[in-house]
Amino acid sequence: MKKFNSKIVFTALAVLLTASCTNVEDVYIEKPTSDVIYSETFQNGLGDFKAVNVFGDQVWTYNSSGYAIMTGYANSTNYANEDWLISPEIDLTNIASAYFSFDYVMRYSNDPANDATVWILADQAYSPDTLPNVSQWVKLDLKPFVDPGSWTFSNSNDISLNDFVGKKIRIAFRYISSATKAGTWEIKNFTVKKGTAKVVESNDGSEEKPFTVKEAIQNQAGASAWVKGYIVGYIWSGTQNNYVFSADTCTQATNIILADTNDLSALYVSKILAVQLPAGVVRDSLNLKDHKDKFGKNVTLYGSLTKYFGIGGLKSVSYYKLEDGTSGGTKPVKAIFSETFANSKGDFTIVDVTKVSVLPNIWAHDASYKCMKATAYVNSTNTNYESESWLISPTINLSGVTNPVMVFDYVTRYFANPATDATIQVSENYQGGDPRSTTWTQIPYPFTNMSSWTFVTTNPIDLSAFANKNIRIAFKYTSTSAKAGTWEIKNLVIY
Image 1 (cartoon, one colour):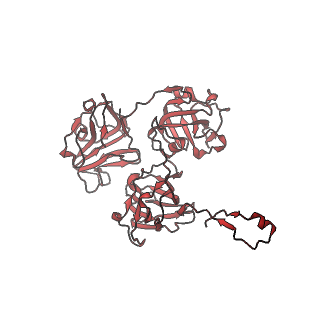
Image 2 (cartoon, helix red, strand yellow):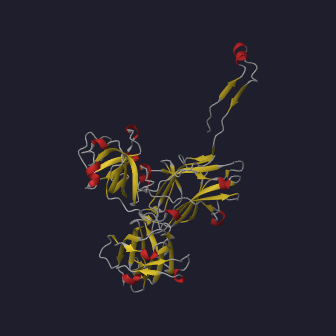
Image 3 (tube, rainbow, N blue to C red):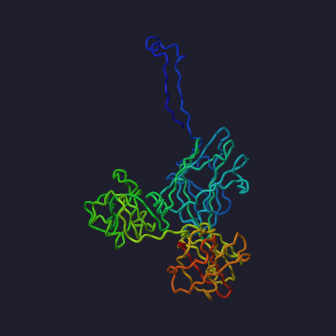
């Protein structure tokens, strides 16, 4: 039910005060109009939204905690699914500008950029009893959803609908999973409003745009990043962790708490970041046992966005910078290009030159180990397959860079010959398609078969031959029916 405040304006006040109120011509009620065009909280069900199952046994459902949920994970098993949650028709025919937003959690997806997408159908008839025809729908170009490392809802921020004003539309949430990996998507507080979408300047975790604590909590994928916030306490570990918003009684030096405000009355466990202080300069400078004066100070830290003490965390902190300019630790090298592969393949392209019918791709994202993984070995049948697969970077601009180098973390196991089956290739003219039609230069690196699945970091790989050029870097994987190794890569940096 819509609510509004009535505003009564009396223009003939003297008359109304001295005479019987029989003449009401000068009395009117002004009703403010709502900016909300359509909303569905999912607090009590799916409302007018329709759950449409394309394939798979799981469907979008309502959770009694007050949200819509879809997952292909059931009974400790991943299932392949395609399911849509489709809004009723929303009329924008007389609207000059509009936008929508929603709250969400997306967890354990293999590839959020493809597994959780938002689509719009404009000025076309659609019956929820039929399967959606993807060719009629428009996929919105949104930043991929990120697994926050917890079940804390995030807001999508305003998403413009200005390309669709003057039309009647439906908005849909499309979910995809596989028998290898099935994520979970939860949605609530869906709202379409009149007006212009607010542009939210998103931070990227760089030194220039460090994450806020809220953003750090939403990006708990293990990647290294800069985070800025206030030091507001510390944590005692035990049977039940004790989060202390004070420095007075602190007698430990191994962690601190960070928040987006130093107003203690506004602090909750869901809004704080647990920060690990490794032994060394960072711990010696920031711990509240020895430095009570640091309480309430604003600090920028560099570390790994990893859950800590059961909540959002920043671990392995290697550098700090206080609001007064004091700094210490080892400052990370500024990257020309980087890709962690923590959540997806990023802007890289997979090209399977030799396809394996039983595998969607040879190179694939591994959500468990937050890396890209190539293998043509199928464990369930103990079978090796002949293959050739390329993982190719977007264009990397090395203009003005005289001595570029590259490092990344890797595992190489069970190859017949890693020196030929796992190679690094660089091209100055690859434009897409079959990589064999383009000139590539192999960058030698002494990969060997490793004895464990523990990642190691390469030595700096010299790219100076490509200084001042635009290049693409590819990781070329090959195998035979006799031997198919496994290659895992993450945390690629060029500097």
